Image (cartoon, rainbow, N blue to C red; front, side):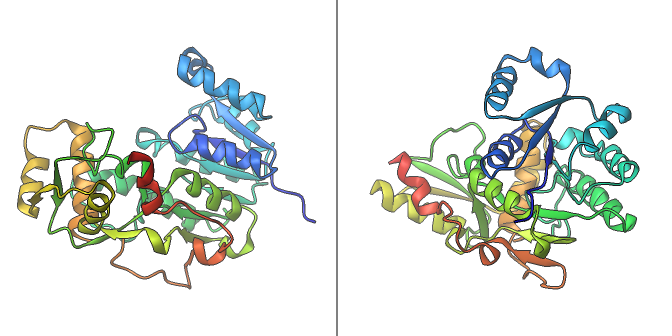
Length: 311
């Protein structure tokens, strides 16, 4: 049996990174995370790092801006997974350069996840967010010497499903709901743990080499209206619905309010729920594969089951 790859996760204490770290260890990979020493001063992240150490994760101190530490870390592993946040997308150029210099990496998974940048037509400020990912993707492809896998996970379930896109809410609505567009456009939702499962399965799979892994669970493709209907059945109540047409969404994005994070979220919602950028294309088998078809043995969390915990 072929030995499992050693995996370095950059951004391992972040939102999606922590799930990948735990899944990597669970699947028997020697798992490393790149950690800035300043991160230890954050009580929450320091506690998470202690948890990682307790399950056998190896800490490597370094920084994306310190090329020497980056190269040293990369030379210890076979696979590099980046899960850095939006503020560090451009810093992944340093990872690419370090991978080139190390010359030993079998696979690089950049910080993609989310939606497929080759198929989005977003307005600002989300457009710049996607453009940075597209730039990194282009650099990797143009090098021709960096083996890669791009992972497209669509909506993070824990980010969208509990609040229906309202960043201020922590639970699904009980009285009224705002629906983007006409509510009929389909989108895809994937539980964070399932994203990690599919991603780690892909790192040593030759079928995912130099291609895009699309995570599209068939039971989790819903329109906004269908999600609202599902939730209404769960709670036995009809919600008051406010439909937000495209012109209203754009006006909100372009106005003085809300703040930038909310504007980015609104622009992404516009891309997904108005333009249909999550589902308005088929996976091209010449450049992409679909995760649930590759790994039918994975029992993913369905949207239906997800909402049971709120009832």
